[in-house]
Length: 304
Image: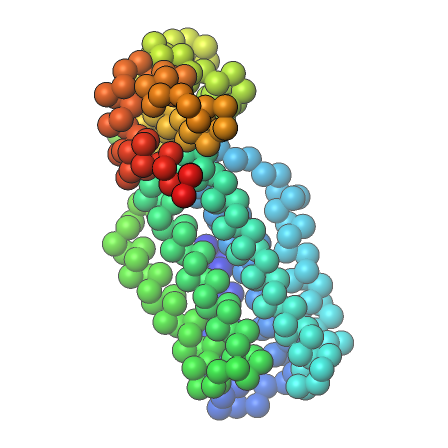
């Protein structure tokens, strides 16, 4: 996020100075090259915030910033004179950002279907990615003279960053890792991340959530830790309790079964039990809470 904000801030500064003072084309290219850091920053910010348990090697992160480095190193050889070649490079910068944003949205949507993302974080990321994509589209339209330049990049980027700032002030959890609750615990945040990685593997590989009598004690025993440590790990990393964590897996499974042709004639209660719920009332309440509609309504929506 820091790189994202810095890149747009530098772009705003360039636009403001260029509006009043002549800037050498090489210097302008350096500021344009900074835009190539925005896409990768969006991608890794989205992955980390949505699923902190994801571990990515530093080398794999740095390779995404190579285009920005190459653009800046060879800025003297890149035209910035309004020619067709210059417009090609300019369009490439915009498309580069757009591809990363769309890729991030697709990845986030798939993670959302798996139902293991904190709702507040999910809402923020969709808002963040959607607004940024809108900004990039407007940027493209300005660069191709589709809309007037007086709506320009400096004004556009400034407004967006101000809106992000206001949203962040209202949602400070985005910039905090609250460990005060577990200040006396022997389990560090890094250990919590490793624990939920093992837990995710257990759930996705062995589908442990399908066991209707699954308890936090049984699950923690499989991981070789105490129930308290497991509860802490889930709360710290996913900002939810154990019951909510398991429920989202079960609801996701129920939605999958409701969409299968071989389950078309199954009663809702049968699907509830096949998804790991031990009572139809618990299933109905949980399904409605997590999807905002009933299982019957969800099935009907698939048929319409």
